[in-house]
Length: 282
Image (cartoon, rainbow, N blue to C red):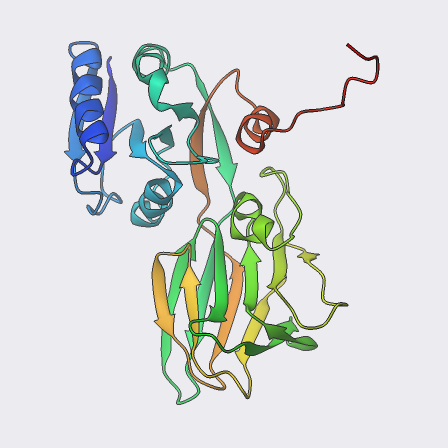
């Protein structure tokens, strides 16, 4: 029985449009293309496929993960973006994606923890929960800093004053959280990583919490134009005393990876880790 594949890519980008056509041609007769989402906007929760292939950068994969909802269909990313931590293959490996992974089925599935963010308005309304693969970020949306009360399981831990606060998954630890000085966490670990952004207090440092703990971020006084971003794609304006609860989602994301490619190989390539200097001279 041939494998069923669903293709996702923004065909307004010429390279992606060409790759969508080429990939469909490469698998023709040996795998069944059950659908194509050329705009990257379709609800993927009802897609009946063995594999979803996303041609694009990490943003396209983040969008696909949210649109899959509770579906356990694995997603293979082919990177047509920049860094591409989530995309297992580079654009030049399109033939490999067709032959080895789609047709041959030689891949492993990395189960990734996701989070959900629920916004409790100070006036009593509730928005969400919104599921995220990378992070939920309360941040300033103008030049003035924000003040955020940070609670863990209902217990006030501290108040951050600065550009904002990131609550990330291990997958998101290599994204905005890493740029803010947070640790890199192996994606096989389940945890919440809390990283302040340009905090005014020098004692404010990143924090790693257990997967069952619940983080609450409360917008406190002096925050002129705060906002909430989930995976940098779902945005909410915030007001004083709004609260955002962030917890582990019950719906993991399944990322397809070539069998021979590891997380640390991706780190070496994407972060250009050089290893030890040559102490022996020339």
